[in-house]
Length: 248
Image 1 (cartoon, rainbow, N blue to C red):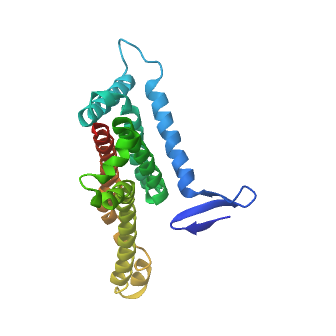
Image 2: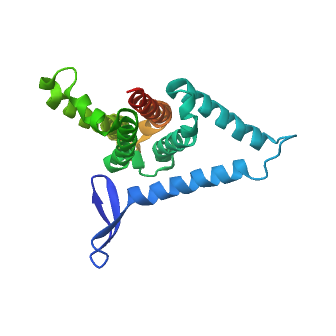
Image 3: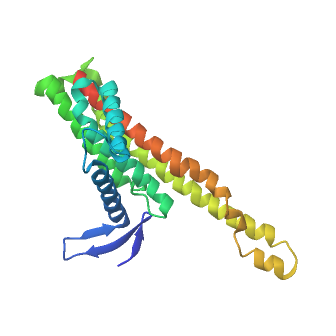
């Protein structure tokens, strides 16, 4: 069954499987994960201690840069989180960049980034329990004064929500703006060339000539720069929140 729900096409809905839904978001997400797994396999096979290949050099460069970034933002004790941060950044960037291939970007679906944000929130909470203990964690909601407890709770809940909506909003808005520009250029092209006399005007007005080239400028920002930027920001916030939680 093919229907559209909130921009993501539903490929399958089965009541026999408990109402299981297979959406375009899920399919594209698995495609991106398969690509990430393939890249990791290609970069890490047949590693050598000496006379390294360009492929191995690229893998070592990525590992070194990401490890250094995690250490600088979270401290030496969190160096082991470098693989998680790298995977999160790669998934986020490639999911958003998949729109360049005409795919529905999984990051344009709130459920995707909200799932990541909830995972990060669970890790933040774990670090707070680990640092402050069970009683210390709940006592933290009453500081600096008890009256602020409701506001502290709201602030805690707002963390994953703000992370999810920030990422989702930037990617989804880019898709909406690009679609509006395409529609506006098509209308402008129809009206402008329709003013030409005779068959020439009738023919050219049916061709969205102004759509050629002009949207590419927007694509550089929304599809390339913004996609990578939002992946970086999401990971920076992840490192900042988890690092702060560990400090107590």
